Amino acid sequence: MVVKHLFKSIRIGNMEVPNRFVVPAMVMNYCNEDGTATERFISYHEEKAKGGWGLIITENFAVVPEGKGFVGIPGLWNDDQIPGFAEFTKRIHKYGSKVVAQIYHAGRQTSRQVIGTTPKAPSAIPCPVLQEVPEELTIDEIKDLVEKFGDAAYRAKLAGFDGVEVHGARVRRKFTKQAAVPLRDNSQHPQENRTQLPHHIPHLRR
Image (cartoon, rainbow, N blue to C red):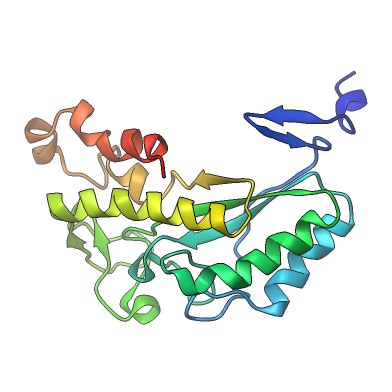
């Protein structure tokens, strides 16, 4: 039976998780507006570790401030955010749990009210929910965004995270979704080009 393996350890790459119980990323909005950790954020996840969860995946670490989809989510876009999350991972590890940072950019799924400026996305097509028209990313901005994902992953490593999870349902998915990248662009940018961002981010090394 599958159940008999629940309490057995499992290896994911170089990371050994003590059991098969995983807390998936869930937005809590418990961080400061500048993306730094709060005691509320730390203690919320610490309770999961105390409870014996083997792997905790933390929500939506924005790679740039304008990539936030919510006001109170964490960030790894500058070095000042590292110390608070270093304390966070230390307290999670105290109970033997592993912790992974989910890094992301909200793309068009945010608003001026949240980030204080016009959202950036692969195309100037509004989010069907928020209805705010984003600015289209330039080629140079796309290249820079790829680097920002790498920088965020490096800061996660410095903060003591055991790994990162790249959120693929926001700006990455928008590059490959026809509803977000118009058909007129498909002829100019074949599928292999439209998948450049999702392809390059996982291969970044620091």
